[in-house]
Image (tube, rainbow, N blue to C red):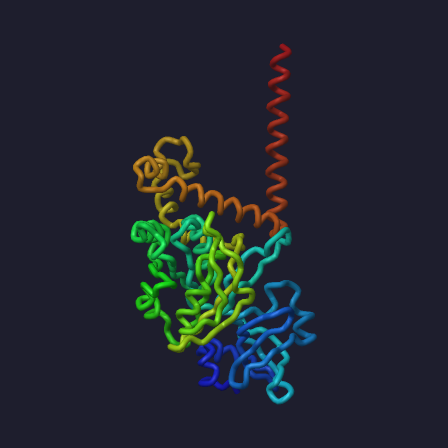
Length: 364
């Protein structure tokens, strides 16, 4: 039997309780992964925290990186050595998961955070401010099943923070936006109102945006190392090196993550539709259903760009992210890859036909 009250401290709820009772493993207890380090996982629950390793069965079953336990996962564990260690037997079905394409050339998904209720997408209001990057984070967040909240840090280092907050609000399309300074504490009272006990929040953002400083202020102690950003471009270095889940003084759970140099989207079609819903709504008003939004007459999107109600950079951002998704789909989906190859083959064949006809007409 799962100890509901003891596990509630780590985010256990009726969803996981129902899953557990439907398929509980004999001799196992539920535990939450609160940290990960080189093939070992720190787990917590209705017992003393301890390090755990994967069982042989789990190692055989987990073919891809995404199937391995991630920080935030609930797992079935067998407690050993008088609660000094544990063996992870299986990963419970995830309620949400924030993923990205694995860095480098490998075409695999990487789970950054699991079973998150709200993702705090942190951006800094200094020289590294980038609304296009936030669109990327928002797309993957909507796809994950978690709710997004945008946190604009370093308000004290910005000449006009309200103007930049308004710019992000146009990108957020209704998601809450918080203007804060982790250094001075400005805006934290409003941010802390959303941190409900038992709910899991994750800090996500690039290196240097101040996630560790935000975490330390919310934890009310200096648990995470912080470093200054480079003066030239406000870019930061990794100070948080592992993903770790903490219980905040008010009872909410906070996951801090290493800064992400890049977030290449993974299967985020629905997330992109959420992020660019305003553009899709405009596209529905174009005169032609197959409008490319380039030079066609009656294009509502071009009209909006001309009127200044739609940012050209936002339109280009949507196009770029959609192209990334199409490229990824061809890499991952064999049928899509075949379709793409056939389409290219037909185009090349048609072009050769045009050249032949042109050459033939030129000889007459």
